[in-house]
Length: 499
Image 1 (cartoon, helix red, strand yellow):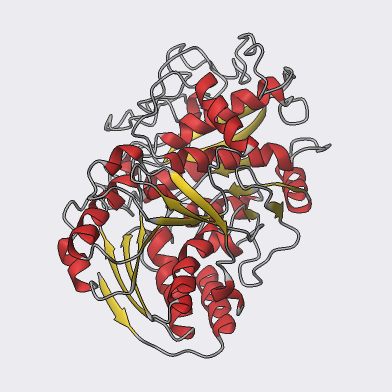
Image 2: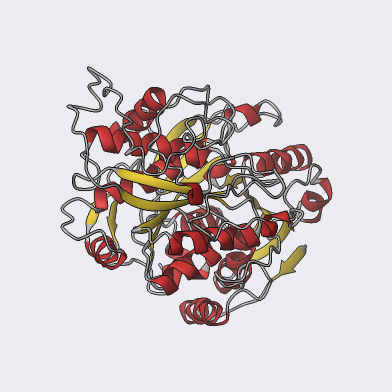
């Protein structure tokens, strides 16, 4: 879908607030997020074949695997209806997205995250072992696996490994082992709705997620059920303004805002966008971010491209006169987009969402990621203790080679899981969703991988997005293979605050 516009708007904040609140009240009319948690029609939001709706995951007591109906679920055991969880450290390979409980039959409640294995000895980064025991503290975690595009096995790998570290070295959630129940969305509205139903029926204490294109469905359902929803990176109205949600970073605002800083500093005017056509991206772009640029006197032209599109030459050609390009998607999508951008307009400055970056993709992109920039609340600074912790957790608890996997998805899941543990420090509640929600909304903590950016959900920095819990950001310039070459603290959300 091509969109070119140059509209001058006054009252930017009022317009954005009205748009977001209207969207929250009316739902997503595009069919991508309007389905209720009880309606499993199976409509596909990401161009998949719709088979996700055939799978019934809403019954948490029948033990059925979500992959029965069509067998396409690469995670094979991510369905929490059979009791699978992260706590099953039996050494099986998670590189194909399988739940680690699959090999031992997925016995319900068997593991607590440490699986009886001895804690890694002598790890100076982890510190002294502090194992959790007792009744598991159960959270839900949707993973975007099992579909035909946007396959994100990284989230489960990182969340699983982080939970094992938490259960062996931080004492779990105030002494109770953190148990994560995964559910595969299969990149379809139907399966995402099934996951929402499943989390509600299983009465999880919270839902934690790195990032998902189905935030509107999941956050809406959790809000209605009174279950807190904690997400690292989010863009949907239910996540940003809906009840019960907490968004740990302002990444979506920083990602969209950083190119405006470049345009303003260089007295340029035109933003070009190549973005994956999924609800979590298009919804915010059309109703919030593009109008914000136009309200600031900047031009925008955007092309939303279906997931899986290999050749984006025509899309790039249509916006080739842009002064700066913003590319949004996962590693596979961004590889195709960057191939077209760097071939047709090799000198244009490029900004990416962090999920775009994969060292494996660099070889397929002319010049790799050299000089490309990403903006985010977190960054993998090798001198940051959290980066050392992140790498140590992956090295210790993940057996397979992670080469080629998207580091953005890995780090998002790590950030969400570890931040939840940090926010729960000092928790004295009974594990009920209501007591967890109160704790999360009142606690403060350091945002993992942020270099000291704080999480404070009680004092949101964006009035029109009250669920956003932090505001800082880093502008990261990349090397050819996608590694960071520099980090610069940047105020990238001024476009949305009037600053």
